[in-house]
Length: 606
Image (cartoon, one colour):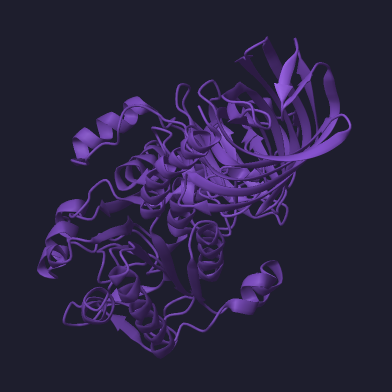
């Protein structure tokens, strides 16, 4: 093979890689928008203020910031919450209707433009606070300056939305979304007049023509008295705490990183299955988008700012997680045989507790395996009060298992998730390791590649030098890696007078620039610089001279471009090609030579 043919091979290999790059780039993750609203107070006279709706809003805000492109927070934090969440206090706006709808209008314009560009979008609208009905029966929730009526939902939220999918999460009593209470009068009251919860809600939503919005999904609270909703231990509503625990990943029964409506519904059903106190009973209504009943509420693979707590299959039991502020982040009761990840902020310290033991999780970007944490004994203080004891005794008593999930889906009529768990990674822009946008928790800073390499033979010799490459890369920046590269090649030659084999050995330092395309492909440009040696097994004729011997210390530089394609969380395929520039000494001259090369290999990240 001539040098020209070798160059053509390198060019062809890169050309073949381009369709993979294009396909990966086109399969972009949806852009996500979250509008979070909460109000502790009601505009209705005599209604007791809530204590923690503002805290719930902030904690939704912190959770959705991990995976959402834009988050808007509308709430007024009380003094205690403002001290506890100073970052949220700086970005929170009062929940006034004009500001909320102005934000939606601006986002709708953005999402319409994205739709024209072929991008999917998702809109989350989350509310925590007081709700009720007008005398005519129209539901509403309370903003700071006005009631948000049922008609406003359809005319100002759903109808004008340009999002591909809309997810509504409402935790409020007697709102236009639901028939039971959050923050109402004391004592249990069935607002539906004794009919079954789900049947009444279905009829209610049907009258409001939710079926006209097949891209909309709804999560509604159907619980009892205010005291069942807010618990000082959680600094928030019971339902909202359970929803966040589920959405953060604890409901992911098949471990694919996607929390679907059926998984969330079953998780909360399991958490409350053993509750006996009539005022503590909590249920939800989950209505997945009719256009795609498998549409996830949360895709942890898009949680670019998260770290992951891996609960492997052998781990089981009841756990709760607190952060370094003392905020209770999540509760769960995991069955053996289930595997999932819980997404948390990688900048914070967390304390994972079970029974009378505690494990500390320091800040970092790596996926943390719960089964390998160091556990220490800790004392748990007893609490008083009938509802308090009911919550402590009965919440999360039933383990969330695959068997429970399958049975619940069969009873509730949900479309179940796929059966087989698959490994997945975070779509991250930046971080250390190669794989770019799919680097899980930015911990894959190191990569090792072994593969085949071909380069044009030395100087004016015909043929191709075949061999191996071994390279190591270390990610030092979002777009930069440094590393080391080792190459070996051999070429056999037959000339008029001689037969010989020429061996080439090179060791070089490497610096690469990289650019993620989509979730699985990274294109690279690199510069390699170092030394190489040529070693001959016999006499040879080069440049008209018949010589023997070696050139053990020559200069070599490579200019290359290529691509890496992620195959699994740990493995990737690597292809690169370019030009090698070398100095070869043939006494008494030092000759410069350029030769095209091509390399392909398989690599691992760690």
